[in-house]
Length: 359
Image (cartoon, rainbow, N blue to C red; front, side):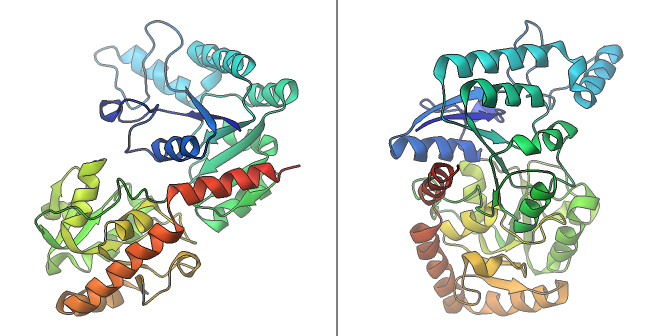
């Protein structure tokens, strides 16, 4: 099968040879697993400028020229004002015409590829379009993505409730197949010094998206909490900050704690974030919030522990900090389990089977 991944490039400083994406992006592992299974894989990096002088990513900031800053902000809100976006769409059409993929894997937060471009690709070349996202379309999707929903042959989501929302927007099919997993060559225990009794790695702001996560961490702050993040922290957790963590540094940060606390964001009511599988693969004992999807992937009490509310989390942390053997047994069971059932090889095999079954 010929598979074209249409996604942005993040963290280019972490790129390694042989892949279009760095290991800090799930797409790195998709590409790796698909090629291992014998599929042809290429990528279209949709945040690469097509016109000379255009900025690479919206995360970059213009300096000095306020007019340029305003223009950039308006272009992001109204992508059709951005001439470079039109040029990128033409490049994608040229890529598809020349390479003729069987399926396009289109990742979320798509502000660049227009609905009519996807429609033309389907009409002229018969490509299946699979949209993959780990976040809620109600909270995060762009008007561009919602308008294109009827063109998606399949939507793959981490959170089942997000999939239902995509069906309501017009997608043909959805599957709650987490687009994140683990790769035993990358996600494994690292021999590092313990830096925190309780650890958290991830995003905590803005408040309206992560308030429940912050409240949970505040409940265990005095029990030896360490927080690693590439983003800003709320004032209440500033003194717990241990530094940024990305790629292998993120995995080492996970391994630098006795307990990983992993509350989901406010927008994930079913569950299924990246750290759920990565922390398990690192052999670190994990406590997550009680979401309906957790028993779908883990046996609660044997491979992972869940909490009901911040007070319950505090009680669990205090117990497991004293129960070294029990903690180690659950962590080892979780690692064995994800290696057997939740690797990127498993995910991509399931994805290919789902695509093959499409009419």
